[in-house]
Image (tube, rainbow, N blue to C red; front, side, top):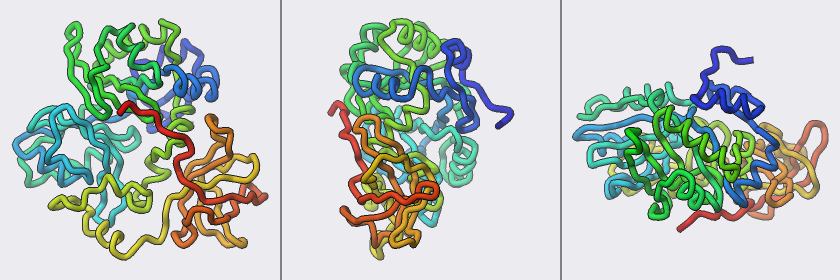
Amino acid sequence: METNLKRTCLYDKHIALGAQMSPFGGFDMPIQYTSIIEEHNAVRHACGIFDVSHMGEVLISGPEAERLVGHLFTNDVREMPVGKVLYGMMLYPNGGVVDDLLVYKKGAEEFFLVINAANIDKDFAWMQENSKGFDAKVENLSDNYAEVAVQGPQAEALIEKHLHITVSDLEFYTFKELDIDGHHVIVSRTGYTGEDGFEIYSDDAYINKVWDILVGSKEVAPCGLGCRDTLRFEVALPLYGHELSPEITPIEAGLGSFVKMDKPEFIGKEAIAHQKEHGIAQKVVGIELHEKAVPRNGYDIEIDGVRIGYVTTGYQSISTGKSVCMALIDSQYAALGTEVDVRIRKKVFKGTVCKKRFYQKNYKK
């Protein structure tokens, strides 16, 4: 059992609701309250709220903030309007992934970066190290912000009804900043579920209030990290350490659209250019099993008894009922329709390479 786990500002509320808690990214986090299936379906069909206060926040500001973010980040922030959010990655020089993250443009010289909980210290050190020579400041604000994600087809209506915040004017991947009763609040139309939804960042006091109002309404289901994983997996959203890692590049993960090669430079650009020119040896694919079984992270993928890769994430999909997984396999076997074997404990199950997106995203465009 991990010791010295951090707690979010909503920890006592999770305990009061009887949440099953577990270590995640150095925090003691709720995995589920009622059941993963119930919470998953609440988000797909109605509305759920997640405590994501464990996520990290970094502010890059100053005259050369845009140039520094461009140096660190695979996506292109040069033409980015204030109020826009971009997804992308920070890479090592070899093309492996330091982290995947969101970049919010707050002003011409101010960028707000949201990073994964387990990587906060590593990412911050990486940004500081690579900011040398730039006229820009890098600040770790992770302890200043709590965050909830309100996700599902009813999220917009319920936020407006219960929190009295207008969010219908926000387009997908945009945000606004508000002052609510003296609390600085950032609200973005973003999320990690494949459904429409919002992420709200503020201080501990305001996020506690948001949680109490929405959960207290009985119209918004508290949801744990268990269904956060089943939801993101069904729509092929990657999880750092599974579909992206220092050993898996964005090209291998199928996320090349977030790597803008027409930028002047960014860390890892040469390695990515090499992969684009010469091809990749491994690739993240979807696999559908022919019978019911649960392929877990790390299980071997084989052809004729020879290991060709491993499962990165696998479940019996709650929304489709199918036994499916994402897997990193040798590229020569990555064509759609390729028959493979998935070794689950001592038994081998037949499967077929398919598209990674097992369920259609329902974002508001």
